[in-house]
Length: 353
Image (cartoon, rainbow, N blue to C red; front, side, top):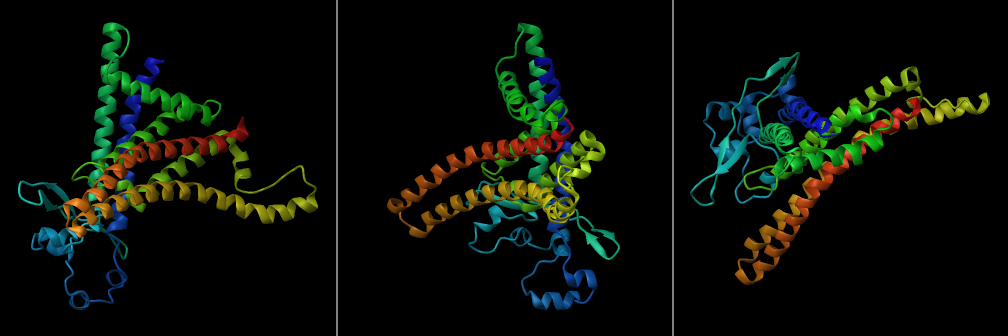
């Protein structure tokens, strides 16, 4: 069992890199999508500048002529939206009040595909995705190595390695395998990758100077699309030609005069059902992570709005309580995403067993 968990931890760390690259590309494409004027050429740069007097162009950010605040999209006293939206900058610790400094991220030349320009320049959420993948690799691979070293030395893992083993075995034995069905253990590394990658991404939004990339619908959407592809491939491999029964409703137990009308009525329902599964995964994770941060930032804003130490203590304690709840939600949402993904994979494979 311990040898198998060691192998799973190592594979999870390797899968995290592929995972984050797909999500990062999707995030960059959505964040830098060109406007209608940019793609059709109907609006000149001069007219665009007149339409938006204070707009900051990509060239200004790329050549360093824009200020950090302009490049990062900070507007005056608005401190809520910059924390829950993506931007071209990242906040770093600074010794002067307000103890943070906005640093503009590099801008790369866009890649032209036909009449479309795809900008793959990094954004704040892309950086957080890369940090999450790095944390997955460092924590899990280090835990696997410590597990192997302790097992050879004293016959059992201890300390950090023991904690990692407990989490891996719980997700594998209590969440993944019971729901994946017969011979479903080969999908356990994917479920573990989902859990740990989403967990680290959620937790990064709870630390100072961090950002929650899972509060971005394009990130959760890509995670859901990857899960959807794994679900469908699992169904094709398990059912073969019988996979078509998950797309088209053809009940052989019904008489032919009932079978055809039910085919026409229920087949669209079956297809919509396939779409709603990844949609539910994406929206649930996105909404939960975004809502919690908005509540915390709104409560913190009340402290400055009241301008009173006495009255400000109430929203302060409420914000601390919500932060404690957010810590629980970070683990809960990673667990739910992994659980539902394993359930969906098990359901589509059920017909073959």
